[in-house]
Image (cartoon, rainbow, N blue to C red; front, side):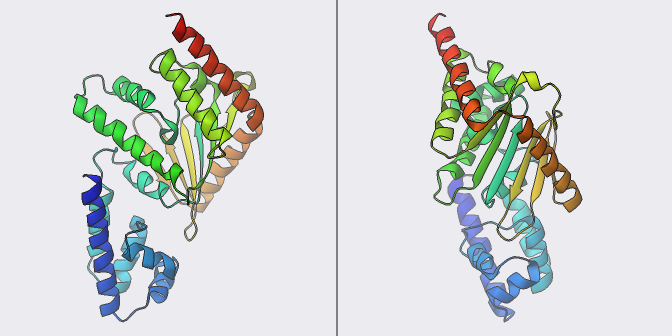
Length: 277
């Protein structure tokens, strides 16, 4: 679904929400109280500034007695074919998060990927895919990264295993550009980056990527991903365990200053390699 048509669809969602709410004689504040978000969030849903999570849409249906209307619209809108089914809700939640913490054991997180790196990763996972599919997938990934340019961007923490720096995805030039981009974002205080060095040995969450997200008016969530699946959870006990694992990763990692030095050194090594090939 193109960006413009998706936005128009969310605007329709907001218009219908306002219409149904007013017909029921319920204020934004009262509706927010019943569905466990602030009245301000309801106003932002109605203006299509923010997108509700699926469970919030379900509670809106229950409160306004709309027969599943908002759940159906929400499911349709978050079912973006540019993303795997299990990841589409995560892409929507990223836009709402006030804080995102990620751990990447082998691949640069999508929010930090350069076009060349994203293309190399996509082609490696889909060697027989048509160019249109690759272009669309890479475009979606770069579009997600737009949240880091917003004035209201989330606080963004990233812990990278040193493997991310050493696996030459896309070749030395692409890797140099990728690591230089991460270093630039770190210097600009857009992201706080830490690297877990090889010397640490075993560390928490070695099985796959981990993302923690916090929100202004909703409970935190945890998302874990392996090569072919992902799981988004908001069970408080599970999220607490994930947060503890992330704390252990931060303890094992180099300081932000030392991590930046390692990033810049690795980028320089790739630049030298590229110049000799």
